[in-house]
Amino acid sequence: MPVSVRAVAARSGSIDVALDALGTVTALNTVVVRARVDGPLVRIAFEEGREVKEGAVLAQIDPRPFEVEVQASKAALARAEATYERAVQQARRMSFLSKERAAPEVENEKAIAAEREGAAEVEGRKADLARATLNLDYATIRAPIDGIVGAAQLSEGALVVQHDAATLATIQQLDPVYADFTQSVSELRRLRRAFESGDLERIAPDAIEVRLVLDDGTLYPLPGKLLFSEAKVDANTGQVTLRGEFPNPKRELLPGMYVRVRIDQGLDSDAIALPQQAIQRNAGGGSEVFLVGADNRVVPQPVKTGAVQDGQWLVTDGLKAGDRVVVEGFQKFAAGDKVSPRPWTEAGAGAETTIAAQPAAATQR
Image 1 (spheres, rainbow, N blue to C red):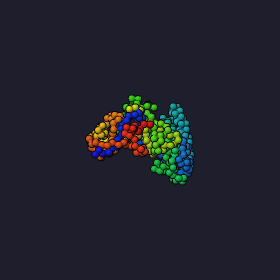
Image 2 (image 1 turned 30 degrees about the vertical axis):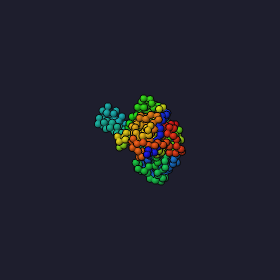
Image 3 (image 1 turned 60 degrees about the vertical axis):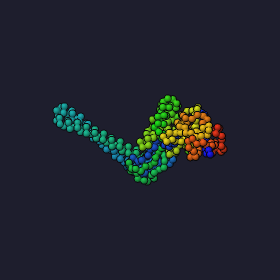
Image 4 (image 1 turned 90 degrees about the horizontal axis):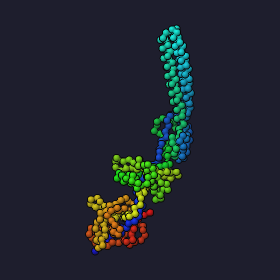
């Protein structure tokens, strides 16, 4: 007796072809803020989770020791300048006396050396003053970039140490953001060929337009761009990490979110799509389907597949419109067996449809 199987009729139609890949949102820049000088933390000046501008005051280390150091450096510089001025005058006098043969040449040479030493001492004290002034400036911790500041990791009164591993806070730039996703090297080559041939729209010298699908299935309203220049190969998996850049003015995209990155690849006016379970693998690893002939006997048919589009395989070669393809019941028959095909209904469709009316292009938008 013929066994019962589920089948669909291959049907061609126009399909918007797009590449979907799972990605993760990452911040444009992430900066860890640490103290650059030692001292007690006397004030926390930022609100956690708020946006800060570059140069905004985040915290204050007790500045008094650094103010004292600045004053001491200024006094040392003034003393060095006075000594240098005296050495300059002495060098002038000795030069005049030496020319008049009223003083030995060796004394003139000593005066010239003392003048040079005084000049070097002045430069050294200027450097000390600059260092002390810089440390005083470092006592006020400022935001290095624009972004969203995270939770404070230190409290007022804590003793901070220069180059310590303890962080004050983390600032992330969230407009724009990146969406990183992986693809095979062959897929990257195909994208590059389509990009260079003009099949994919070029929106920048090295970028094409991409879209984001959020975890609830909605399409993110603002398009982004795929940065080919950011591609890099993982030495462990052989996969290529691609990066899309998306505007994020409302801060809807947060680091760590999982999204789907969609690259529209154009309209296929004569595409055939089949449910994923209809595509089988033969002994050689190739793709094949089982066709139900006019006499209801099942025969294998090698096919070539493209990308998975909205849960269905796009078949690029090996099928024509009207071919009846087995979708369920593979374990019940062998090639050449006679079967009784019944219409296949996609899960959640609600009711069965006839094989002739079963749409193959379920990916149409």
